[in-house]
Image 1 (spheres, one colour):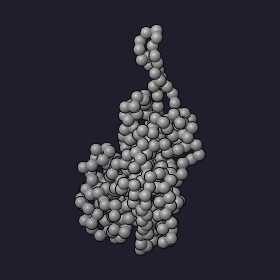
Image 2 (cartoon, rainbow, N blue to C red; image 1 turned 180 degrees about the vertical axis):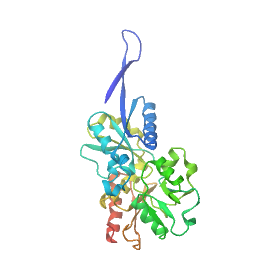
Image 3 (tube, helix red, strand yellow; image 1 turned 90 degrees about the vertical axis):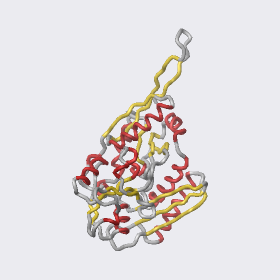
Image 4 (cartoon, rainbow, N blue to C red; image 1 turned 135 degrees about the vertical axis):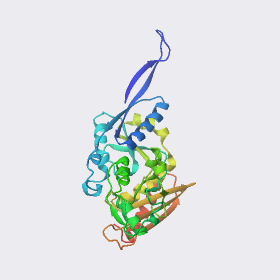
Length: 319
């Protein structure tokens, strides 16, 4: 961590304080920059000087193929990790659902922020709800999770790929390429675009992705100084929930090529975890569901609950 100095008291006997100077690596999409500036504001409020390093990732550049066919959501974080490794940045801000379940050697998830709305949102210019669509209507999403969940609700629908940042996806909808699209409610709300949401799916209809709605902060393991600065910003309740969700995904070999959903809610000390898995190649195959519940106060206990849910899924033939 770099540091600048400033005098506490002018004069020959001035005391000098060290001011942490941090650089945040981020993607350059509007939502990613919002997330980085949000973290910048929080760190500045704690007395840090903070710069932002915007970067274009492979995931941002490849828009003509689904992520499951070109390497997964890790394509959104690789360049940011290179910046951390080379010392050009001190931390990287990610949408946690885009962060691979296993961090590369030498990196760690140092902080999980308080979660926004984790649910999926229905966005359409013509139809208030998914149930209002005519038979065979075209719905846009490139998420295998959303694909299998949508087919469970409406097997008649035509699900078509939808790639690009949030603004690009909304533009394609407005051009009439889709009757409606499904997006994360959190992104729309963070960018002040909640008015585009026609309906928010209940989690019993569309179970969210592991980590959806939460921000994860990645650092190099050796950066104990940055870890200490981030510690007060971590949200313990969110971290326990997403630890269980990510454990399900990790145990199932989770990536964006895995049609898997996992969502946990903490009630007091009891964590309630639901998971679902579907077969995107067999439209007639039913969803496989799992439910685990238990007292959880540590990340290890949360992960154990996630492993229990994954075992239930596998016992029913998932994966």
